Image (cartoon, rainbow, N blue to C red; front, side, top):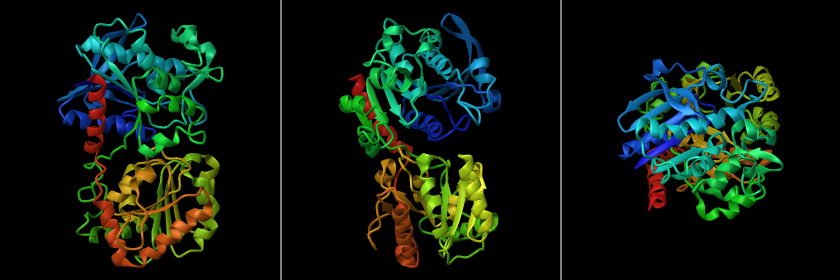
Length: 476
């Protein structure tokens, strides 16, 4: 198959979350299965295309009558195209906004990306059978394919797939922006893109794409409920037969404790001595006492409402009284950053907080920690619990979204890969941690559990096969 994949992020060039990882890994996995995949993403100001092997193609396409340039890189069956627009993308360091606000012209920016992506096939001799769109930034392309390209000889037979990576972010704008986007007022209807008297890019994808997916089976169910549907649950129930939950995968080459270049020692499920060495080195790096007898609990990620950090802060006084250590790497809400930094100063032998992001340290935390805590309010898929399983770090998670689909609760001896709690409550989270701490004392049971986790297959190859079957069904 020929597949055109459009995303607003492409790791490692641009990334704010899991979307960038998916846009890098899923197309590569599909290409490895023999498909021809073209990925289109913006060339943001932070990207040096030449350094990453791209070549400039000037005036390659026309967007609303104006010539536009692209950067192109081809590797076997996989091609990457970066859309060039100095004002919309090149002059900005952030992807969607600065540290305080979203950019005021995001509707125009990503409408431009959608139109540019749909001009790529004709310009480069492609005939994609599938157009795979990702999150609100690309939702408008589902409408453009059906309407502006309805008579396009290259795209008239193309079927569209729209993937929801996080329904909480929908791309909602004032309706007055419609003329600037070149859209007719006819799209501003309840059964099209209107949403509480505003324009909704996510809804465009949900209404006009031929098939819908999201990043875990449980999240596919949750977003059809009033609690998890973010105001779009009725539409998603209406399209439930077109909606499929497919778990994200992880890059087993980038995340492999036996070869990881970021680690001071290597290990696998049959030889765990390297994991113990990683724990000691991590404790020393973070300034924590190097004690093998204390469970080291880790958190890596955004300090955001979604991630359950309010539960952690509420439970922090209790945690600091327990015989354990806590390591945090992340950034987000300023008040939460200050709260964790203050707690780390007050309890330097119990808590280490590193505010910001460090890719190498993230790998070392996954390898050196004993327990990984993810008490998310909601979690479409989650990647850190998958990294943790692969690195022999036992997850303690809330039973939501992809966490519920990937972590099996420990039964006391022979079953389970982690500890799962249900209620969004600090006491429920602490109860999960208490169970993990008790199991940590039984080294035989603990090692058996972490080896079960390390044996799980959450590679992209498995996920790519599911997408391949979905594409094939649409084309048939």
